[in-house]
Length: 315
Image (cartoon, rainbow, N blue to C red; front, side, top):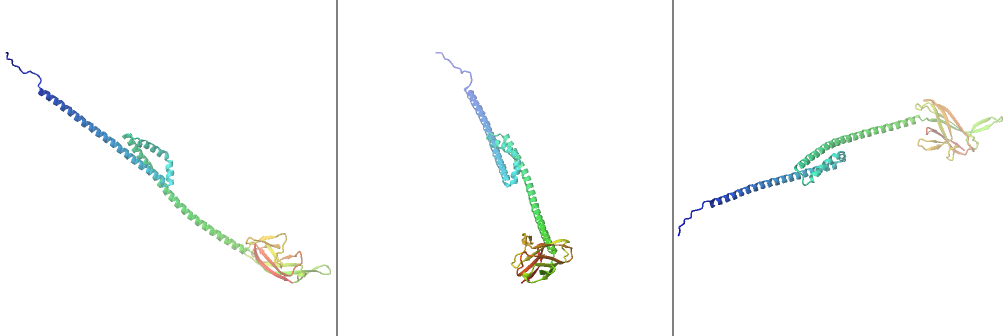
């Protein structure tokens, strides 16, 4: 029997193979660990960016809503503000439209949100300018209101002064009018019986009997007056019969100072000179029928005022 001795085979040791495998596993583990950390860091960064964008969008929406609330407050503040805002509505509406488009876009980028913020600041800036204009208008209106009140007070004062002057003028004119009214005096009423003598000449005899009276003769004077201007003065003579009626014809009337109308019997036009007395004014009246017994009253009027009266009685 042959005695054989086996020598060990030369080659790669299992020990080193195991070490290599372990090394590879470690390298793979390290690689995976590093990559995992990078992915986690990347995910954290993306999450932070998304959160930042979301926060920015919420901030933009908050600022925009605040601007809209301010805009509504300005519109509700006064009609003047609304009028001013209406003149700028195209500018405001354009900004609102652009901001709305970004705010309502769920996928708005950071650049778009920044642009929206810029436009919101511009909108607020415009509203601040509008408010300043409105305040100026308010102050101007307040001043105009005060000026109007002052003018109203001054107008009322002027009106009151004017009314006072008109009242004083009316009083003065009334005083002058009253002062210019003439006054009659020296009345003499005669009832005349006109008789004819044997040669046919008429002879006048005064009488107190109605059946003998043919006519009434009225005589009076006008006193001097330093206010009444020179010129012709018309006098209205009213003869009232015993029955109280005025002896008149053809519906003759004149106006009294109160505005009422009164019948008159006849008129007398007198040439008058300022400040001088007129004496011996005479007029006659013949009735259409016979005189009746009773009282006959004669009244003389000038400028609507009764300036004298006298009575005569027939039996």
